[in-house]
Amino acid sequence: MLAAGARLYRRRCCRPSSTRCALPRRRAAACGRPAFISAYGSYGSAAWPTLFADGGYLVADHGPAADAALRLIMDVGPLGYNRIAGHGHADALALLLAAEGEDFLIDPGTYCYNAAPALRHYFRGTAAHNTVQIDADDQSVYGGSFLWLRDVASRVHRHQDDGALLRIEASHDGYLRLADPLRHVRGVTLDRAAGVLAVEDRFECGAAHQAALHWHFAPHCRLEADGAAWLAHGAGATLRIEFDAPGCGVTLVCGQQQPPLGWCSPRFYERQPCPVLRVAGPVDAGSRLRSRFTLLPR
Image (cartoon, rainbow, N blue to C red; front, side, top):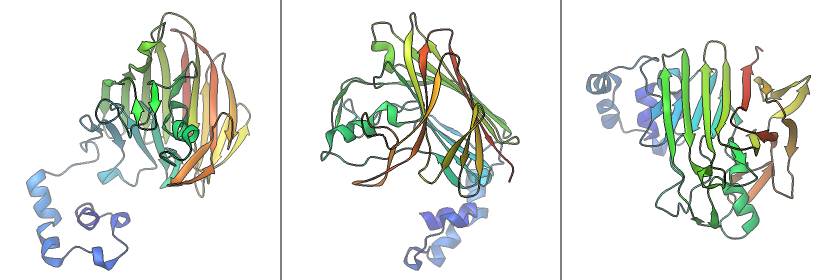
């Protein structure tokens, strides 16, 4: 499959490293680009789909724009499969971000199933993902290592993408169960030409709540304060992160034990510290938490 994708989309990064996985010559001829384009049409970068509603993801950029400076994935799907969502994570509206081919905002992984219950809960919980946690609680009610007690549904309200500017607004209903029901609404704008990702979180509620917005960075990233902003240095790229969140404080956390925060798991039963920017404070219906990520020139 990877070999077919590499041939169809002319993407070297998809080529299998093993020759045993190479596409047979006869099948490669059948999967040539002219035949593929004849059957499915030719997408320009503006026409290539970014929102996959049935799968519950926004993916930008891929296809002809796979070499874009910023690549974004957003979770706009349900909590998980079946009503118990046994393998689901409470990560509605979470974002992943890569810059110039290297990961910056990441998903922390799974770590384990049953060996460490507290860490199992952490890695599945809302605080371990790039979204907003309300009142120190998960988006759903945690019932056990393979059990959530309440469904969470996401909804896309608006989506526009002309190939240069992408805009999406979505919400989830996980916190409608609270005594004062709250709906989290996230608006995202990706300006490809400027290399800027802007995120705005707002809340539909009747009273004040405590919010904690987390941005989890890849373990190789080095974060440092730059005045009121932050710099995230990768292996080659650097992002400048700015916040507009009145009444909230911003702290850097990495490898915190209790409560767990700032961990990622690259493979099963392995974990390592990773830097997390935590934006926390009181919010109400008039609050806006704005985050801006700008790719700096080399």
